Image (cartoon, rainbow, N blue to C red):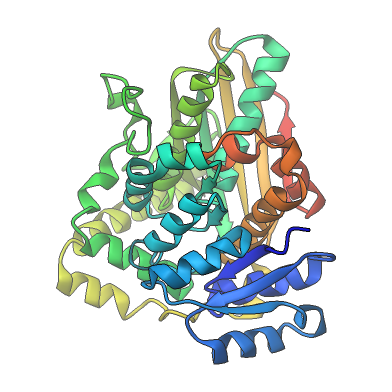
Length: 405
């Protein structure tokens, strides 16, 4: 009998970590699982707060910078679920341990330069060990990656053509937690911040087109004919678009032509119709541009940090319950045929929805492993989980539907 834990939650006492514990306590019947982090006292308090259904969860103590302790942790897990950011500061040794031991790994990072480093250091070894290393399994970037892939697959099945273009428009209501804020500030302070502008940052070598202009991130307001509404730049677009482009390249490498060569994929935030929508799109664009410039300087980051939650803090339960998001996607086939899709969920996107996405990703690796693509490596949600995760999310109350053209 395999005596390993099915899932080990690393960073379980953090803001999102506590929510993952509560989620698995509700949905982990028959699961052998454990909470992990650097403080036994905090882990035990987190387990107690989750109630009787979490009482059987184990406790594993490991500091994020202790490779020996992390190797012991990874050896005891079939899947490691990591919520401890900033991941560039606290995630690298844990991923390395999982790769060496063939342990599957999922997290909620949106730190694409760090993910690029994982690809460079670990992709080949993870393929050899069979470890599925799947970053970006939260709100960044499951709705985008899974939604675009599901839409493209439907285009391929219905029209017999590859999907060559997808536009996505988000509407959302929610707030930041301190871990997300810390990750963003750390990234902007690092020497990797300049990498954020590369639209093909996460692509395998040799798969980026020569002309990158059609793939640049939107920076200003526009009235988009696909949505008949005003749109502005989406804060998480520079994360999600890179993940979707990596998915397209990895699928083509498998011989899967769901996406056409040089997929054009863009994301926006919907601001509304008419004059009001135009004004909001303009203000959003100007604000994001100013904030981006401000955060290039240490003094500017300190100023921004004053208005953001500290690590371990986040929205209240009531605020998270009132949140939600909708992502509308419009896809085109090679000949111009159009199909639409929608991904939507209730609950704060960066907290409630993220918890569902990452927990169901981990559960897919435990409970549906025989239905998943067999590849190891540094993967994306779409290439690691595909239809299995779509079905799990449907069952968890997430809308993922293909609409009319």
